[in-house]
Every structure is written in C-alpha cells, then in structure tokens.
Length: 162
Figure 1 (cartoon, rainbow, N blue to C red):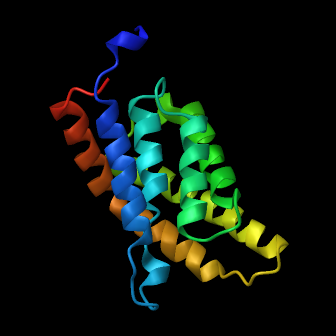
Figure 2 (figure 1 turned 30 degrees about the vertical axis):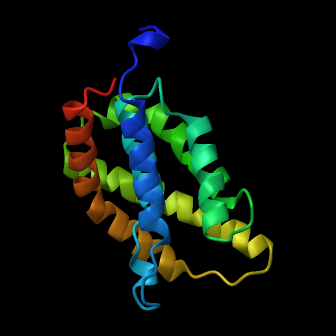
C-alpha cells in the first residue's frame, strides 16, 4: 500500500485531539483517580487497527502533548506511551483475534504498565505516588475499552480509514 492509498488521517488526528481533551477536562478531586487513560486507549486502538500508520513515534508525540497539557515532567508520559505503542505493535496480531472482553484484560495490563512507568518517574523526581491510582486508572480504562473500541471502529469503517 503506497502513501497515496492512505485515507482518513484526519479521523486519526481528531480522535487523538478528543482523547487529549478528555484527559485534561477538570474533574472533582475524588473522581480524578478514576479517569481512564483516554490517550493511551486511543493509541492502543490505532496501533491494533492500523499498525503501519500509528506506532511508537505517534505514541511519543502524544505523550509529549500529554506531558505539556498536564504540566508533568517532559517525557514521562512520552516514555510510557512509546512503550505501550511498542508492546501493542508487537502483540497486535494476537490481540486482534481475541473477543473484546479478553482484549480488555490485556488493556488492563498495558494501562497498569503505563501507570507504573509514570509512577516510577514521579518517584525518581521525589513526588509522592499512589498505587491506588494505578489500579483505579487501569480498571476504569479496562471498563472504557469496549466503548473506545466500538466508537473508533465505527469511525474507521464509516470514513474508510486505512
């Protein structure tokens, strides 16, 4: 497939913009722990659906945007999302054949790994980190996966993104 055969790049970009917006919308303090990792979920979906178009570079770039938008140490989310993209690309042929509920279990592990890397970096710079947030975020991301998967799959098919 040549570069000219790709369609719908704007759908991919728009999905990442919406995921970034959902990641920075203010929530009450008691609900902040339960915010799904929207950008990571979107990245995982596009790495599964279009591994030739969305990869580690996109993960790194979106991580940098997430770092800037969340006022985090520059590179902490970039490192985590690049690793998540790499692992998803490495496992995409296996994950695609699973039913959505089994994919959600894999999503739990990937998001927990992403949160663990973020917590590790925070620990290195002396910020307090909470393991409770890791499990809450991974659980809500796992529960949000079917919604993200079905919504983005519908958009990909409707706009013939390839």
